[in-house]
Each structure stands twice: as structure tokens, then as C-alpha cells.
Amino acid sequence: MFSKSLFLPVTVLVALMFADAPFMILAAPYESTMGLVQKIFYFHAPIGMVMFLSTFVCGIASIVYLVTRRRSADHVAIAAGELTAVLGVIVLVTGPLWARKAWGVWWSWEPRLTSSLVLWLIFVAYLLLRRYGGPGSDRLAAGVGIFGMANVPFVYWSVNVWRTLHPKTTVVPTLPPLMRGPFWFSVLAFLLLYILILLVRVGLEQRRDDLEALYLAAEDGVDHA
Amino acid sequence: MRKCVVTCFRRLRVASAMSCVAVALVCTATLHAQPPPEPAAPAPAPATRPDQPPQAKTPDSTPQSTAAQEGFVPVEQLPNPQDTIPAPRLVASAYALVWIVLMTYLYSIWRRLGTVGRELDTVSRRVSGTRRS
Image (cartoon, rainbow over all chains, first blue to last red; front, side, top):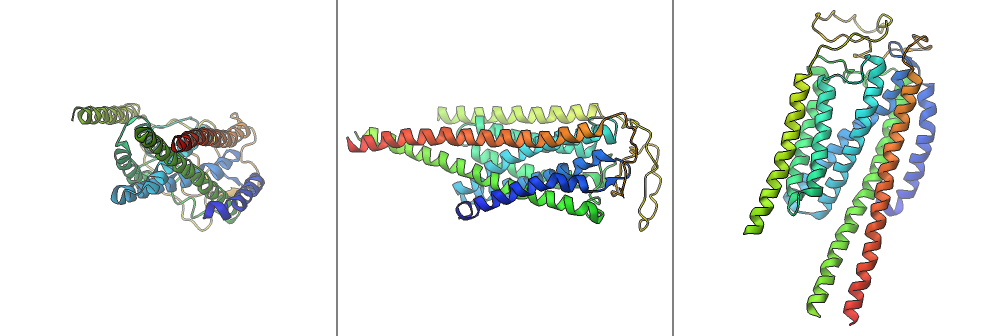
């Protein structure tokens, strides 16, 4: 229903938002200790937030699939799992680009970075399982998806619990007003983009199901002939 | 029965291989754990907000970073214009990377949709042909 009536307007809105976002980010004030490189925050953190959301979408859809065996839930789970892995690549590469300037190193084996890498690896494992696990791997992968979702709170609170170089979770709620606007604008833009891509990806899984049903129908036809 | 055993064995093999990779990575992370390096450039004294109490000094073993961790403090001008590491290049690379990854992913979805669509058409024709005959 959403895809038919709202897809095009939302796509146009997202395109306009992303056209405007760089100007908002450039107009935002510099951070006092990091300077220009802190601008990476305006897309690194929103993508990280959307990635966390995506793990929850995958995990909850996996639970629904395991309980109800509804194919649509499995479609959402695989789409969200794949998007988590893609967003994870962006987070894990833009982070070091920021760290190189702010900390003087590309990578440090500190809790937030290491736990984020492990989270990403879990979702890569999820995708590998879906691709090469053979028949029945959907249920096994659903378990991995739930495990990935359960890992997110540890990644989120790692900066507050352990000693780390990474900015703490207090940064976002205490953002100065001039930084808050561009940040939440970016979050909204990436969130809408995520929803759009998720819908397209779920559509692909539905078409694959249709194809499978057609193959079965074709085989039935051959058998009857 | 044999097929079932083979399938189970295959699944177990995949799962164990993935677990090994995860364990190996965690072990590598632990082995490479090292005290964080000194900051690259001499940084200005961290600014504090007027409404925030001054931060307590951390012990020597605590990772030290000049980058703001508790909150960001805005300034009008760049704090250190003579930086040795070019920040504009890093920011531009990060921004470009976001779009390269997203566009590549969208292209891969578009290609997969095309492949499935073509296959759907072929099989539909086959099914309708079989029904007619």
C-alpha cells in the first residue's frame, strides 16, 4: 500500500533532503577540539543509528518468522539483515576516516569499534548462512539475526561502561542547537532512505517467492503431461 | 535419511566455520589490545561548557584523547588551521564513500530485480505453454 501511493513522493522528498543536507552540515559550527573533521559526525552517527534500527527490524522479523512461519516476515528479515551489513560497511569506514584526524590512528581495538566490528561480522555471517546454508537455513539464520539484535545494546552502552576513545552516548542529547538541527535532519533523511530501500529489497524477495511458485507450477505441469 | 544427515552436517559445518571466524577475530582483538596512541597533533585545551562542571582527571591508564567525548562545543572558526592531516580530504572521502556504497547496493538490487523479472517472464511463458498443450 505504501509502495504504491507514497513511494514516489517520499523518494522525491528524500532526494530534496539529501540535496540540502550538505549545505546544512557546512553551515553548522565547527567543534572546538576536532574542527572540520567532526562534520563526518553528521552522516557517520545517523547511519550508525539507522544500522542499529535495522538490526532490530531483522531481529524482530526473525522472531515473528520463527513463531508464525510467515514468509513476509522472513522477507523483511533478510532485507534488513542485508541493509545492516551495507550500513555497517559505511559506519566502519567513515569512523576510521574521522578517527585518523581526531585520535591520530585509523583504528584502535577499543570496545566500541571492536563490538561494532563483531556486530557487522554477525550480519555478514547471517547473509552467508542465507546464501550458502542450504535448505532450512532460513530458520538457522533467524537465530543468528536475533543474536545480532541482542548484541546491539552492548555496542551502544560500550562507550559508557568501558574506557574508550569514542564519544559517549551523551553527545547526541547534549548537542548545541546549531548542531542539533543538521544532525536530526540527516537522521530523518537516512531513515526515510532506509525505509525506501527496505521496501524495494522486500519486493525483490517477494518476486523470488513468486518465481519459486511458478517453477513448482511448471514442474507440476510437466508431471501431469 | 541420508540426505537429512548430509544437510545437517553441511549446516553444522557452515555454523562452525562462522563461529571459528568470530572467535579468531575476538582473539586477534584481544592480542592486539594496546594502550591508545598519543594524539597526532598538539591540541588546544578541551573546552567546557559554562553549564557543565569541569571533568575529573582520569588516571594515567585511562585512554587519553583530545577529541570531545562528553559533548561537542561549537566554535565559529577552525581551531587549528595549520593541521598536518588534511581534514577536508577525509570529510570528502567519507561523504563520497557513503554514496558509492549506497549507489552500488541500489545498482545490485536493480540488477537482481531485472534478473528475477526476466526469469519470471520465461517461466510464465513455459507454464502457460504447458497448460495450453
